[in-house]
Each structure stands twice: as structure tokens, then as C-alpha cells.
Image (tube, rainbow, N blue to C red; front, top):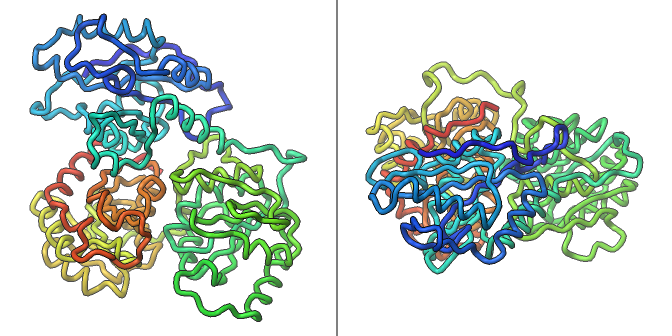
Length: 544
């Protein structure tokens, strides 16, 4: 790996570090400049349209810039290192100086850890720039670029060109039309999570926060709850029964009210007027100065906002595309595709709350709420395989999970197969192929304690994926595309995505698989999972 010397760049001013990102990493060919195969001639350098102005906007915003590029032409002898440096000098002449250059000089057959899609270049760039991979955005034009970003725990943006394959476009969680549009969205996301100052600048007395959904939904709202807690003297959380166990694990919550909401629950009971009156009275008794209502992109905050008004809460903030009338004081809107944690953080910011300095925008758990890890599962470093999900469309087919367990065990990994009490038949079947069966042995806090000491977690897009993210543990994501990957991927943790992103179930939000044979996941080769665990072993977690 070649690394250019870091320069004293325009980093963030001390005490004003941006909430989300410190740096933008850019692929070279096809992203910054037109792709000329194996180019060693500076005269052939042609920037993509709008590149200089877009990069200057990033520099002006205090973001540091680095180039991360595969250059196998060095290994193949198509050009020399001197010629490559001349090309880079010409790029800087046209586009301005970069804070670092990171180059992989190897070919695919060399087996290095720096050639994208491996995460080595991303980690090296983060070190060079004095930050972490999770605070970087990598912009590229092919799937290798996005995969390298994800495997390092960075955000990855795909800007397709005619050379980008359709399956790479389908798998990308963040798409942009060109480099200027990418910069627009990076800066918009940065700005969206910076708090709007309140009328007095003082801490609110009591804030009621609401997240009525499943455990995974509760976990991804955690950073926003912490942001509210930083600006409030007391935080009361309203949740539903499905999210209660996760609510108990969130830092920043002083009191929890559990009550089902029939406009949110997937299998709701009929609306009971007496139950709604009871809930309204309970909310009034909180004496909240404000309420912040968190929802997913397909849910409405307005029914609850009406009850909150009836409970006498004077200031209510929520995301709402529908006209809210007099129900909301802060009506916030968020573009489609934003990761759920950032979507919630932007609402907290619109309500006047921001994460305190030193609190990274990652998922976290209350460590004092976790039980000791069972003594009979051995030392840390095992692989957790969680085949199930509350939504069967997002569960790993049992026969595939069994083959994955067998392959991981054959590769020398200790495998723990986890699942709930109603999944014991599945976990027993999977563990019989290789691994230890923990099905039904743990509640959510117990599962969190096990996940926290894993070397990697192999799981679908379901709650334990977000438990892994909250523990900083790498995830092999067997992601069924019924919901958008960009919104529901494990957040800010090294991840390898597997599965058919373009399967017919894409964006259906189906709870049960609508296609015979579960084709989005059934085509995964267990060898891919073994390789993904190997790749992620070099990324590790962040120790949170």
C-alpha cells in the first residue's frame, strides 16, 4: 500500500466537531476523473463534471479529503510509480490538494488486505486523517468501493457510471446521480443533525419521547434519545410491548411507559376508547414540557399527536409528510433513504437537541442492564449465528443456516446459534450441523451480553443485527431486501452484505416471503459467509 503524507488540512475547529463525518474518501477513476484504463499519462486526466466546485464545498465545510484507489497497473507493469505520481500531481493541479492519497498497488491474485473490496485502504485513510472509519464517507462508482466502505464501518455512496453493474446499483444503500449531488447530500445530512437552538437555550424540564415498535426500531432510535436526554432534565419514554425489552437497554431514559398503539402495531386489537382515555390521562400525568414522537418512514405520528394535545403537552415535534394542522409545533421532513438512526437524530435536532460533545452517533446499550455472559459458552471471539426473525421474510432459511453453521465450524470458528423460545426447533436443527444451541436460553439483555463478546454476528435484517451494531461487533448481514438497505443496515459497524438485493421481494415490506423458495437469501453460498467473517476479522469493532 502506498500512502501519501497527511497534510495540515482544514479539519473541524476544536469543540465544533461535526456530528456525523470528519472526512470524505474518494475513488479515483470513474469518480474524480474519467476512467482511462491503466492511465500513466497526466495529459489524459479529465475531471468529472463539477468535481472542483464540489470538492471545494467539502473543504469549506471543514471536511478532510483523501483518495483511495486500486491501481493494479503497478503490479502488472503498465505504468511506474513515478508515472502514477505524475497523474496524481495533475489531478491536484485541476481539483485542488487532497489531505492524503492511499493506493493499493496489488492485483486481485496477490491476496492483499488493501485492494477494494477489502477495507484496508479505508482504515489506512482514516488513520492518515486522524479519525475513525465510522466517521468517513467513501464515494465510488462500482460495488467494490461501497463494499470496502461497509466492511470498514464507513458510509458508502455509489455514483453509477455506464460501467457500474445493475446488481451493484441494487445492492447500494446510498445512491447519487453524480459527484455534486453526492456532496449536496453529505452536507445536507451533516446539517440536519445539528440542533436548532431553542428559544431560551436552557435545558427542558421533562421531555416525553415516543417509539412504539419492535426491539430493532427502538435500538436504532437510541442516538436520538441520548440527544434529547442531553437537552432535558428528565426523559420519559413511551413504547409498545414489542419494544419494551430494548427500551430498558437505552441510555438516557429515566422512566418508561408501556402501552400498545393500534395505529402502529402490526396485528392491532380494535381501538378501545377506554384504553385511549387511560393512556391520555397517563401522558398528562407525566407533566412533560415537550414531546418528540419518533416513527419509521411508513408510520404516522398524527394519531398520537392528537392524544398528546388532549393530554395538555404544549410543544410536539414529529416527522410528518401529511398536513398536521394544529397537532405539531415542529413539523419535520426527511428525504427517503436516510438511515433510521440519522432520521431520528435529525428530528431531535429540529426539536433543539443534539448529541453532546464526545458522544458518537452510534447505537449504544446500558452496560449496567446486561447480565453476565453464560460461563459455559467459552471465551470471547465466537461467531453468533441468528437464523430467525419475527418477520419470516427476513429470516435465514433453516437449511441454509445449517450449511452456514457447518461451513463456519469446518473453518475453525466456534459457532453459537441463538434464537427465541419459539425458535428452538430451528436452532436445534442448525446447531446439529455445527455449533452450540442457545435457542430459548436468553432474553434480550442476555442475548446482548452474548453478542457483545462475539467476533462477528451472522444475522438477517432483524433486532440482533442492531444489538451487534450497539456493541460495535461486525455483522455479516443476510439482508432480505423487503425494506431498504440504506435505511435498515447495521449502523456504523463493519458489515458485509450478502443476498440478492434485486430479488422480486424488494421494497415490498412483506412480513412473510411473497416469493416461493425465498430466493433473496437461498442463493447465498456458505463459503461467502466464511469469507465475510475473515474479511471482518481485520476490521473489528470500536470497543463501545
